[in-house]
Image (cartoon, rainbow over all chains, first blue to last red; front, side):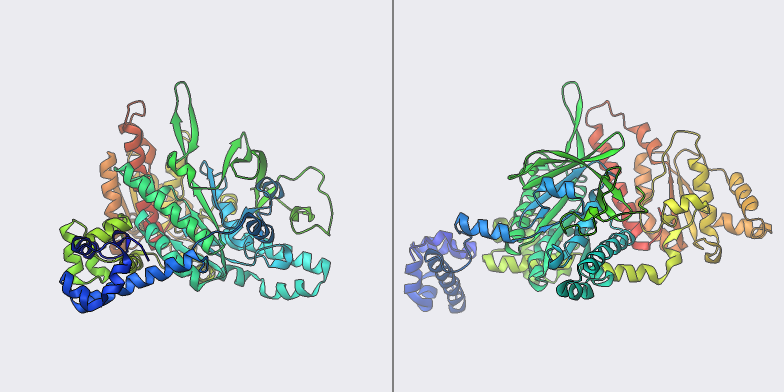
Length: 367
Length: 253
């Protein structure tokens, strides 16, 4: 109640008038009442009433916060967080080596950034994740929906159809092997059509559309509360050209990162971004580093860098708060993102959900 | 979309006037400001500004479509999803051919056949749909002056002798291939920007640019400072316009 008038979310002109008239705390405003306020400041009674309602709302919010009641503050003990983190699922990538270095898969409520040279597999992984997030819970998935924001136009529906078909078939095999009630029931609703209809696709042609879409995302996610994954494929592309004012770019990117973090936390979703690589020219040599500059590096919680080593694709975990830095090879097959197969594939029909590659594969060609 | 005037985003008249006094006329300017700046400029309270932001965002945000709808649309007319190159192994590797609606890049050392492939694709695009073509015009932007009309006719008459049996058919085919010779980066960019109207008026079904690298390498020497940024700027701008054209009209580029 002792809140300073200057900090209330009123229109600036009104605030200036209140301060000039000598009001200092919110308490004083509420005591004066609308008629008195309108006479003192010279605004209409309706405006005064509106202002008082805003003030009252703010003070109620404050009071609730001090008693720790409403959920606007995000404070809880570390024990509660631990329980939450252990209970929440991961989005598996179908490549068990990658899941292992990530600590189980792509984490919810965190921003994961995937950087890499063109053609190395970033969009493939995004499409794989958009399918994997929909795996029902009895198979070890998160049973959520996916939002795919595309700025580069590299989303091919036919490829998603291939990946989704392989995923559905895989779950079908597990269900048939285990023959459990809930598995079979889940398979009824997990089909190609349902997978495709739960991927919400937005095509943004420039950074203004991207900004607008991210502003509208919270409303969209409140309507579609089952969304557990937001993919922004190509966050660097619209920001890398046509920007003379680099400070504006940094400001917009930081704002974007903040909003994505809020979305990830509020809606219990994982946010996956893909970034491009740029060349940093050092003293004697040039190295490939993620684009968008140093300050953008702070936005993502987990950073994966994909690169080539001769003809083998490698993924390096570059930044993570809980896992150590390591590199693993991976393949992109007609069925999607997979591990590198050891020469003698083990035949184990009862593979657990977290190691799906143990299913025998007979005709598998590398892309 | 970005240059959409705020008037059309259905903001009130007085608000638009007030904003234009601060040089904010398009959605782009509006969305680039932070919340506090917006409050100062519009003179509204915090909650009102958030509502305004949602309104303006809705005016320029893209439409949502599910992957399922996209698949249905594509499978609705399967013949228009790819332009078959008539080379069976190439078509198999490309999953059907040159895909419509996205950019395909052909690279290679000099003399390996890129321009020949482009000429052949132009012929294929003018063929009717029953023969695997796209039945439309072709825009060919040539930066190396490597396009030869005689070679075009030679390919057409040797490859499809039964179809191009009369001179008339040959002339018809050649008149639907529009050739533009551009020799500088800026003229290429200008030409690409002006393509939208031409595509609609001439019913173009294929755009070929031969080649992007030659004109860029001629003008931008990477050893000079500052040229790298300009070059990537030019390339990115051209790429985004071409992507937009490819997707909007569902044609291969």
